[in-house]
Image (cartoon, one colour):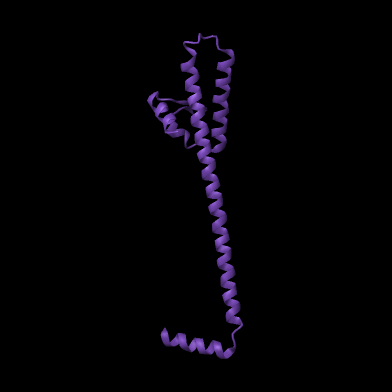
Length: 132
């Protein structure tokens, strides 16, 4: 994949959007929805160029290669962002599960303390007061 980024920077590839002409660095800041919209537009341009171009074959590859490169870059960025979103979602789920398990453990410790006899409680209080 680094190869497509090298190609894009060498030709100073830009992306046309409603915000104007954008560099690859600026495209990384787009939301998944905005990236999808941009990818659809580039894909449409690529299909239209393939279907409707009357440019002789000697000129067409440079036009098509830039759109194909744009689409490859957008697909890569979309893939990375989806993976990051899934990683963040999994991390949030794991954090919530960990917090819940800690709460349950604290509740079980409270149950153990409450199950102690008055004599056991007084003994532990006396021991702890001697240390503190």
